[in-house]
Amino acid sequence: MADTNTQTLVAGLDIGSAKTTAVIAEVVGELRAPEIRILGVGQSRTTGLRKGVVSDIEETTRSIKKALTDAERMAGAQVPSVFVGIAGEHVQATTSQGIVAVNGSEIIKSDVDRAHEVARAQVIPQDRELLHAIPQEYTVDRNKGIRDPIGMIGTRLETEMYLVTIGASPSMNLRKAVERAGYTIKEMVLEPLASALAVLTDDEKELGVALIEMGAGTTDVAVFHEGKIRHLATVNFGGNNVTSDIVHGLGVTQADAERLKEKYGCVYESMVPPDEVIQLPSTVAQGDRRIPRELLAHIMHQRTDEIYDLVQREIERAGYIGKLSAGIVCTGGAAAQPGTVELATDVFGIGARVGSPIDRVGGLSDSVDAPRFSTVVGLAHYAAHRVMIESPAGRGRMSMGAPNVDKLAQRVKTWLQDFF
Image (cartoon, rainbow, N blue to C red; front, top):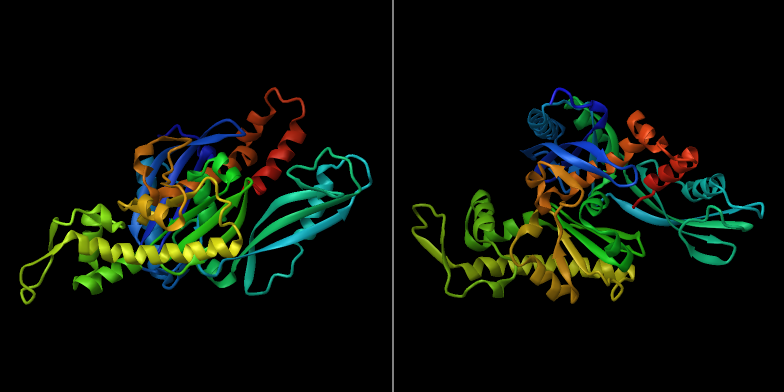
């Protein structure tokens, strides 16, 4: 690996409530559709994060260092900076309008930039910071629903922008933990948006789709319609709540509950044969214990069903019930459980699938072919787009055979800033 060009290496870091995952990848492919080759993957147990917020900087630092060191060892290369995912209840999103006058001739990029600046000029409280500013659509004079106004004629340009803000304190503590581990943060990206890059197709986002990312501490929801992000929400329950129910329901330890969930778990009760029996871990006082596997499935079904009900309320609150023609895509660690598709189809009443990051991924792709890697692979995809524009290699590719290099560069750069 000594001949790998470090300028084409990117690193994604997903610090979850249960596990911290790092991916190192090489950027390959074309400017408009770069691909990644997975070179290294590292994982470590997280003990310093609670529901997306750092609760112990030292423990979080240890988790980050181990995951990235393992990934670097596998890749045979070191990375100085990382793209980091962030999520949690502190995330908020609002819609903002930006209106500017144009001179009645052809709308140019500077006009669009002015509209963006007006829309971004919201007063952000001191305890919050702006993470993403994502244009939804444009209006030229009275013509609504325009996706790209450049080149059109008009006197009034309006943009509708989706502003995503995060808590300043959670952000600062996350940065501090990453820096203590010996790395710098290249950029923070909202985790459900990163996951969407890895598992959703353009057709799904166009038709209308809800991405449900069920992590250990929380469940993130992202609704897409007509190609753009329309709603973000966090449900304060996740896989740890399912595990906790197993602990109390079956009288086992946390570690044993996790093992039972992984080995025998199913979130759709009717899929489990009623005559199947499993052996429970037990103490001397408890004696030999066997239960119907159906009981374990019942516990998992009930809690997951409750979480999906809360997600359904979020989709309804956003006004997208009946508008999700592409259905539901479940991802995150908990989505790997048998019965996920069946339960989601039952609860939401529309088609569902489990999303894994397999498209546009080469190299050690089998190492990340599971729903729990969606966020970290999505971060690598996001980073790949950045590298193709910002690195000398990316600018060199862009200039080859392109008659309007500067215009292309500006257009693609704008798209990269707003590609959610």
